[in-house]
Structures are given as structure tokens and as C-alpha cells.
Length: 64
Image 1: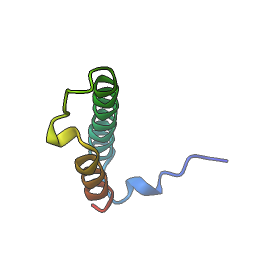
Image 2 (image 1 turned 60 degrees about the horizontal axis):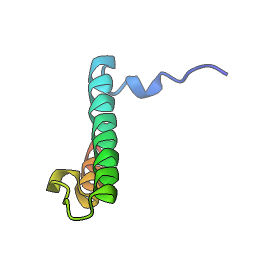
Image 3 (image 1 turned 90 degrees about the vertical axis):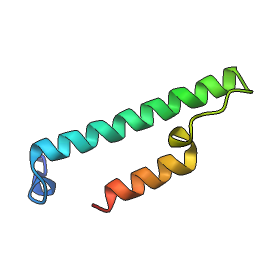
Image 4 (image 1 turned 45 degrees about the horizontal axis):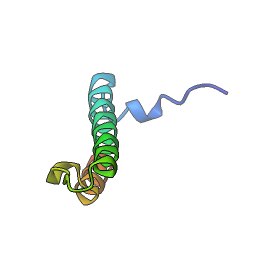
């Protein structure tokens, strides 16, 4: 079984890497925000780290 590089035909390696890094960072930050919210219940996540904003961001990035 070999690696499928076909998904890089649409976008360059650098563009793919930047998008993947952005999404990974967003998911990691939102996970940390949820853990902090669990420990400190009265703390509210910023809008851009709330579940709906994360879902919208992922959908937007995947549809590009």
C-alpha cells in the first residue's frame, strides 16, 4: 500500500500544510478551552473557540 498524493494535485504541498496546521491548532486550542471550562465552570470560551464556530471553521476549510 502506498501513500496517495492525489489530494495534493488540487493544492500545493505548502498550502495543504498551512491549512492542516491551522485546523490542527484550532482543534487543539478548542480542546484545551473545553478542559479549562471543565475545571473552571464559570469561564466562557471566546466565540471563536466555541463548538459552533469550530464546526463552521472545519466545514469552511473542508469545502475549499
